[in-house]
Length: 358
Image: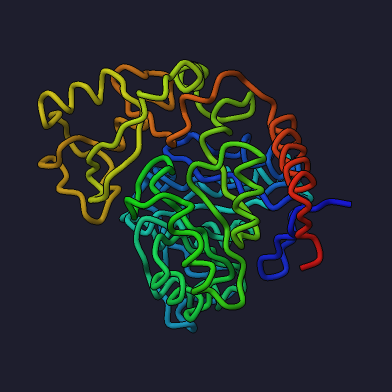
């Protein structure tokens, strides 16, 4: 009998209380998400840069068979690439849980959200900003919304507005950050602030011992991202994965982002050039961020992330969490999840703790 808590998010019950963090651009797509779902976790596709590229297409007027005009909602450009990723993930993991992480800071947030819902995603994760209208949309289409927060106030507000779960993301997380505080500092206060929905710990969760500590502090689940990069099923290029594996602890750095938030990355020639020059000249081909100054911003984050995911770790930006220096080999996803679960079970047994059935 497992000692791990049972994670229940609006009726969704993964075998293990593990969510794979969404990683964009194009690091966590259908292959990784499906592998995680098949292994008993909750797989997540990152919607970053999966918006519809043909902006002349006829907008779609329905979502999940419902007429949007009758709901007082606008038509949307159907994001074909995102829909295809969801379809492929569902085909590979027909019995698994597949969600989509959509940054609220994205210019095309609305169309990505409605596409994800229409294409059959099991849940939505919203981060990098906060949109109150999103709660209403997800309620209308009866899809669980998981909100990423970094403060008790944000957690309490999210629960009040209808979130199905809260992800507490700390400064140890990879990518864009909403706090400068560590996980063990922010987690207890957010657990206290949330009354009825599960809290999921994220940022710096590396092994089963970290999982056990999070559960001991009141979390019902964990979100892990960086460790899933170094898996055979991860959608990024092998050179990207090897860069993560070869990174040293001191290579974990914080940089500025055109999103308007600090970000956690791995030191490489791109970050060194940015540090030296302050700005990397570029055009704007994507119009991907609501807050971006486009050609006047310090660099094009879309170009930088796409380059690294495709294997150019010299001219691209490599996002990762604080424990990147501890990642030292490749795993198959099911092997990694089983190792995490076994380590956690052993740690909970050692501490004589049992969270099943709480």
